[in-house]
Image (cartoon, rainbow, N blue to C red; front, side, top):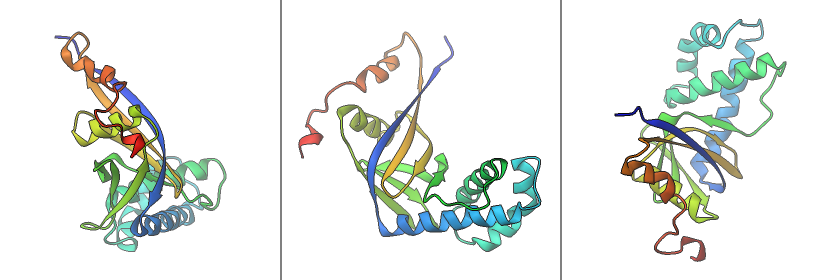
Length: 183
């Protein structure tokens, strides 16, 4: 049997964040700035930065999903490597383990058991089918880039070429039985 092929598809959605998610975007920016302040002396690697301050980060951001500590430290390290001193964007990088799709909306684990909900504007049948595949667990979600106005979601499919499962990719182009774009 052939090894499965990993197919990654990213889709950009306009969106509307609920109040909890809007608050998260502000907090995530402060998390990145916190990491940047700790990294002012410079670090050779992201791992060195994270390992040096992770315990302090857990205390400072107690209650928040630890995935956000990981992704905010990664973003801070990227900013540091590019000479940025502050996180000016209202942008969050959300790890795959902190997101799910339910009722064609993006759900984000914030401070468990608290979740944020992002309403996605589905603009075509392919976007609808991608969300449905994620909701039905026919694919995994990768990292998500989130702003107040748009979200970039990565969908990861494992397909075996030559098996009926390879039809999953073809099915992304099918029209939904009920045209969700006209609702």
